[in-house]
Length: 602
Image 1: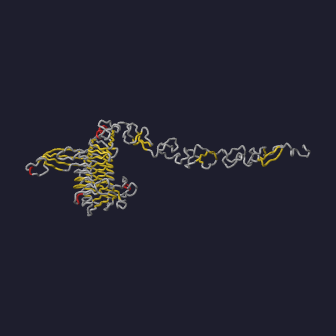
Image 2: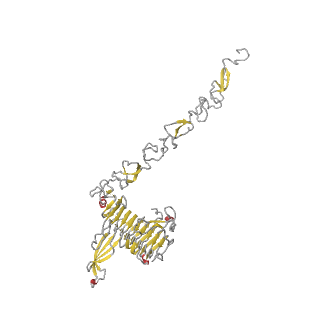
Image 3: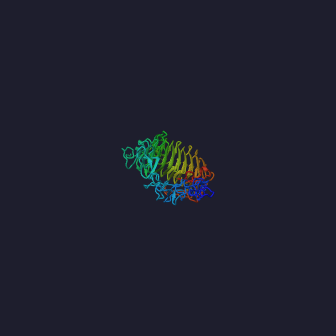
């Protein structure tokens, strides 16, 4: 009690100022203090706490992203432990510039978290952008112009023959190494296949390669094991691929690549000089494919036989002598002749192939030549063939001006035309003991002298199943019994469904003596009169007899300018079978005609 006032150490000159530490964080509140020689309870000598009610707030605390001055330095959330990097998005494409960074708890104005933009001045450049051929890394992946949307498709050329594999592709702005611009290689592991033929640049001594092509199709066929590619031009030759399971391809398409046999129709002066333009007659079950050609100028595969038999006439010179030496000539397949080998044909035009007319010609008193012909465009004997996107146009034979099949042949026909062909019977198609399944196919403007303008089914088990087909203004002999569109002989079977048969002459649309199932089809004869069904044929369910209202169809001599689509008001729309199996490709009920059904979008 230095001042003898009865109290010890009160207001001592050497006392210490103490500050309240209510939150016990070791830091005192400058606004709450007391002087004392000894430490009061819950007081410290420090006076730097800016919030003595929160032990997490003091000069030694870690700054957090919480809108609080955690470390009592007068700033809020600066250099906070939870702060993140932000990057400017100057072009507004949602991707930030990695070259500029600001760390903060919240996004500064114009900043985003992403830092993947490689050009923040162009909103079309950012990760995920479409790559274009522009010498710019549009998608910011470190590569320029890779897989560009406006690039060309290139095809692998692993064997280095300059011909590409359609199944192995890449997209690039310029030709990459090991690739080429075509899809012509059938075996990209063998530089000798395909064999190349080019009428313009090839030669007879060519190696059959892209740089040294051959100049005839036959030379290419003879050299090939797998396939032959033929560039555009006219090849004046006959081609025989009998017994060869190869692919023969006119790569520039049928309108640009022609095989023209250039033959004259045979007669008594040259009975043995006819030949097909294309022969496939190995008889050993080979399976070649041919596509991309116009095939023309053929006059038929020729066979002949001589025998002594009754003369074909009753000339007075034969009095007491009724036998002649008869040489019978048969001609089959002016454009294409198939015998025993199965074949596939697509993207072909088979046109202007003319076989001899039927005739029996006397040469002197007791010598006669008899001429028969079959299949002006295509003749198939004892074989299975498929036709797709094939035009058989302007051909002639006595039987089957367009197509003829015999001896158990089987045809699978899709998206095919037979038009403007002429014959005595079956101007469009003639089937003898053969079967044809035809879908989305058109027979138009074919003219038969006698029976079956469009389709003729001879006896001996001919079968035709036509679905979504059109037979338009095919004609037969005048007189109701001849079958302008179809004539079927006895022991034949005809099925027609969802089809349109349109005729304009005084003849039955269909007539004959075979079995028939004709349903959900429009049989219209614009000549009027009762000329719809004749013979054993009769109407099944769903038959119409109304003008189908084609968009633009006629027999004007040009088979390639017709449009057999249905106009909007056609009664044949949605008039085919309601069975789901026959629905149009857009899922609606079947439209009758060649553009209805599941494969009608051709």
